[in-house]
Image (cartoon, rainbow, N blue to C red; front, side):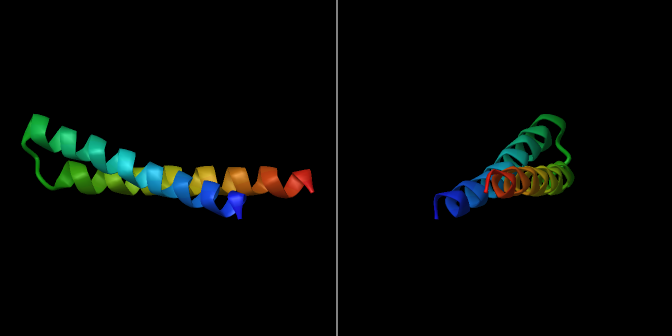
Length: 62
């Protein structure tokens, strides 16, 4: 159960950080909503990569 919480929090954190960076870029460059969308998608990809990496590492321990 702890592994499930860890994997889900890594995915959520990736999306949240990407969205926050995108929001900041939009405010800075006045490019709303394009920076938000692009960075949120990049955050999602980074989150998925982290989940896959962590899940592979966890399955190797067993």
